[in-house]
Image 1 (cartoon, rainbow, N blue to C red):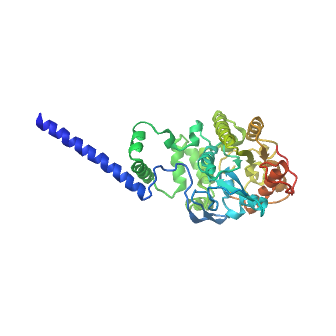
Image 2 (cartoon, one colour):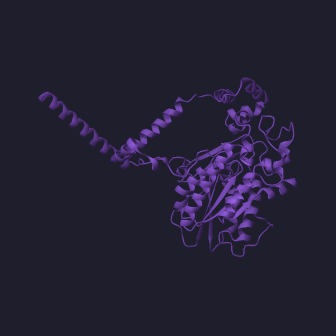
Image 3 (cartoon, helix red, strand yellow):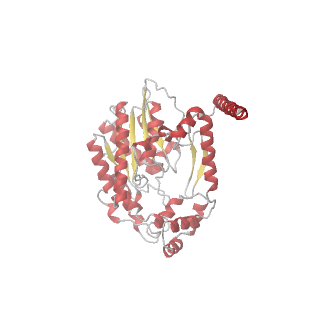
Length: 422
């Protein structure tokens, strides 16, 4: 009995020593700057690189918050207005310099000596409304913005999860429970380090291959796509685009859509499937929560619809045209009816905006008219706006802001073009 008691005492002392040691170690990690939390889903801060793609290359730099924007003090001076511009890669300015992005052009137009107007670029490549909404609520709001400009791109619905909820707008640790909550409460920095190491280990376990075609083919087989369809898709692939995608100089997902998600644009624009309708419910939840949180902080919200090139440029519907992306040839379903009228997603957004009394600008008719005039606004293969596209968008948006006095700072700024907001 005595031996057993001694063993229990020794074990208790050992466990207590480990607890104390880990506690002290966690404090020391804090002294050396290790964070208590990992910022989930946020962009990487302090990046500086040159991004090179098939049709262009551009300098890419982020500030300490991970935004493609200059360093900006958190505390806002009295003679300064701040508008946070939320959206995906079109908002981020993928393919152009930061000075050529439409948000930078808006900032240049509206700022004047007595009043600085900052249009903070909160765009994030590949982001869904939940992702760029999360970025606004967790980072954008720290800048004390006066306004929020939500830039909804045509594929944002397709990029939304079916079961999207308000929880998707906040970092995962807000909903930590059980042993995870206890472990983080005791040793937050050690817990965060272990989670990061586990994430890196999981990435290393994934198959490492530069063969895009085989990787996509394997995914297709796992999803039940028959071998005949896969072989047909392989034959349709332009070799130069495959080569560029393998070098990471072309967006790989574009080549995969025809095999994996042929109805991608139907769901994005027409809400054709039951899944697309469920995704819209998620978008409605996300936008409504962002609006509610913004209004509680007296932040004026406005929304813009950014159309895809399929909605305004008929050249994409031609056959065997090598200078534009061959959507149909690669198996993606596209409809020429999108070149006229309004898509279902545009109607949904307009109805949401009217119901919530939010200013709404639809860029589709303006881009249609400009392209009919023979102006090229997009990179031919990549599809993102070129510098001319950003300049044109900035002109339409600035006129709308001025004419409708969207953010109550424009005063008597003269409009350059006639605009309509439906």
